[in-house]
Image (tube, rainbow, N blue to C red; front, top):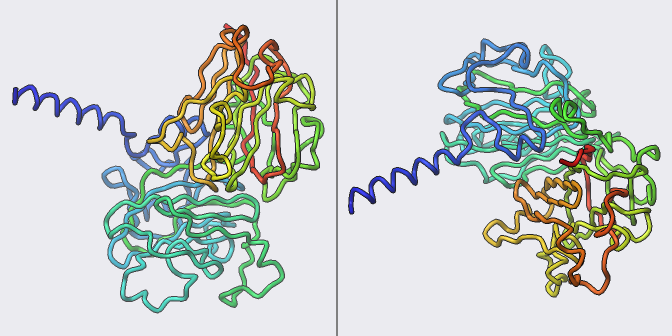
Length: 427
């Protein structure tokens, strides 16, 4: 019996280890979202990196700052999500340069520097508040107290979208700033920052020779198609700049672009083209109590929920929704098919204020809804055509195989980005 338990334990540990994503690789959700690896754990490719490559040798699958200097990407980035892990030695000091103008110029001023620092070190006890870890150096102080103990790996995510810069450390938002607030004003450190309002530039590490370690370095460009999506035939429905009347119809004025994302302020925004079999992808962020929907297979802009089908977008944890019907929770096909819920995974929804990734595929009568990598609806609409529906009204979309796609708003400021679609042939 002991031997059986021993082998069962070994099997369990092996399965657990296999289930975890290996360092310097992308997990399945990141691949779907469009992240790209900038470091494979083996070397710093000159096709990806430039400048002080020799100052950052690769040791045991990690980038280690030795001589330091500026290690920047070979490519410029505008709107993006940059993720990486770092481990600090005692007193360690580095930085992440974003939208930097040139490897030869100080990114803290000719771009922006997001500070990487051992906040606990005595020698840094008298720094200015905008010099501590996560701060936009010289400009915006970060909230403190979320670093892990020295030597442990920290996960950081930096998002630049328009003039809004957000920094998350180990799941906590420590900076969320709109740089537009600093236009035509004296800056907090009293210095010139000519690169503060650059719209694009290089990204990388700004070392001082301290052996700070980095791994799992990856990036996602916003409101663009990845090379894979281009090959697969996806079309971009939003470029980060405008809700084009060549693509969209309906309440265009009710969906203004703010900091390179679509913000719902109105009603229904639908595509001008019909789609029958398709894969639709987008990212969304709901405010507390936020309510919207994704309409599909609607013949027009009016009443897509009932003339087509609506996939619900909702902060269903808000107290005002405590009496929802089962078909009203997030991801449900409104009035027809309840979404799968999972209390242990918070119903696969990220916390209010975080970005969620969803993919909706409608192939013939097969409908699938994925939320942050979890399939929450997997149904054949044919099975529901002759059944009594859950709501008082039967959506006409149950009988339709084509129609418009879009957003169904209630004026709640739900935000959208990375909106793209692919026509798909039914098998």
